[in-house]
Length: 150
Length: 354
Image 1 (cartoon, rainbow over the protein chains, first blue to last red):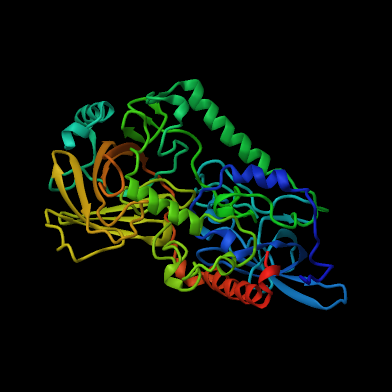
Image 2 (cartoon, rainbow over the protein chains, first blue to last red):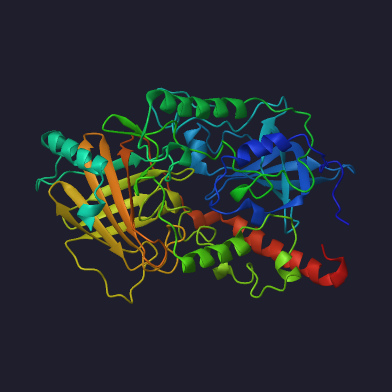
């Protein structure tokens, strides 16, 4: 009934369940908007491809990446990331993610079935987290003398 | 009323304020200068964990354990993922709250601070200090009914289907953009970030105070809500209702006292009603720290008033613009998604709906 391009949408059974439950313990009851209203738990996705562009925009960033389907055609997906303010405080900037950089994103597709998903985990091809959490509101980008993470 | 609500820590804090009075920055007219940027993030919760009972303070070891736990959680979540990982599970990842069974609010988003806060050198178990158990008083029976009704509509697990069609609920929660929560519509920040009372939330916890003789402005980083406090003024007439309420201020010695009424029927403080009344007290306890205290009254919601206090440490971080409307694609995604799920639910024979 639900159709997914097989090469870009991989159904999984469990793998990250414990990971998600871990976050659930710190997730607030109220937030800017409930991801539960926007994304479909029945449509998990795993997306891999080069970044096309980054919308460094409030309230949340959107990263566009180009994914190659089984039939070799290409489709651009948008994934929803953190707020620019939080990213700046991690030392990330608009041009930190370069076009052409290959990333791997897992998440769930939007309920409107457009090529949009939540960026549950964004990594480089070797698995390193692209988005790193930090303890506190330490803002390396704000403080003179500290290197920005590139 | 205010005297009755004054807590012992509050009295101590005033004593500290008085002692520090000579050393704090002042405006040309001699008032304490509250202006500056503050980072109010703290891991100390609004309401106290029942395990502490009436205990106001944490031991050093307990406070260190909280900071260690947070640091360890961050370190764990920063570890590399499997580059050959599969997509998350079909049917959702089990995450709760705003993560809504699809995950998403991970450490990338979170700026909750790195530890508990101290007042007068003592770590705190909660922001809330009165009642003594650090918990909000019980709700009135009517308020409990309203809260239960909200949970029935907004607290549903996300199963990716139009349950409101299946159950014949009219209007459905997505039928009108104006039925959606104010935060989702970018009208107010989530939680009580803009307040009053102004409380820490998951991220964007910076506040900027600009002070003049006649007005005090408090800018919230979250959703860029700006509170304009009119000094020595009267409240607007009762028919004037404002998202952040109508705030008027006066100086009581070295303390700025802000009285806020005239809320809409959806104040930032969850569960509160248009009858909400908040009194806040801002004191500068040293060059880099404000003490923020507040008392909440809403007899149509809580069976008694409640009060709290925490510190606002100054920060040299920049406060960034948060123009929530400019790219709120999520709102369109949510409404379009609801239309599609509704169409699917209506196209299926009644017996086949899940």
